[in-house]
Length: 180
Ligand SMILES: CC(C)(COP(=O)(O)OP(=O)(O)OC[C@H]1O[C@@H](n2cnc3c(N)ncnc32)[C@H](O)[C@@H]1OP(=O)(O)O)[C@@H](O)C(=O)NCCC(=O)NCCS
Image (tube, rainbow, N blue to C red):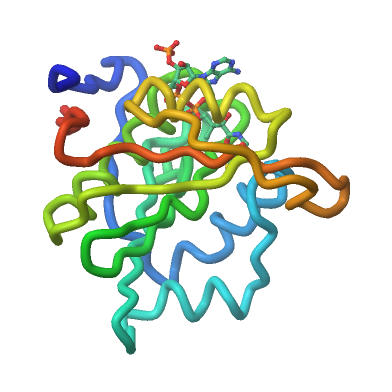
């Protein structure tokens, strides 16, 4: 069992995690554009995922982290994370943070929150795929308890690359408590 981890945003850089809404679409697309390692989903795909209406047995959650922009003091979306859940299984589908906000715990908090969301619904395992060259994301996932399960050869296009398959046992992984 990994001990619970409390994430405490720095006093000079406060932020919180909340559910994404359709109003976040532009900010999410901008972060995705600046994160070529993340899946390149189209605007219509995002619109569907951000819609409060969901049908079928696969449930999806989209979270964003937001803080105060240092220059304008207006609210600023710092990152997003998407996961889906069905029964005992769940998948972390995408996570990305604003380049200038990286290394401050935002990615870990977002992933930790979707892990908690899946666990609360009864998921026992969370899976994901990540580019073999994406060491930063793999380190993030390992810090949350994910372990490598195998490789899917030439899974990605543009450029062609292997996918590393990772999973975590949600029943033994730490829960993430975020202080905001
Ligand atoms: C991967 C990504 C989401 C990490 O976001 P972040 O907000 O910088 O992550 P955090 O600050 O929460 O870092 C958490 C842990 O991840 C690991 N990590 C993050 N960035 C890292 C880097 N550049 N190199 C090595 N490890 C890194 C570290 O273990 C870190 O813990 P530590 O700070 O205690 O050492 C971000 O780099 C990103 O958006 N990348 C582009 C999109 C992407 O690759 N998405 C994943 C697609 S599968």
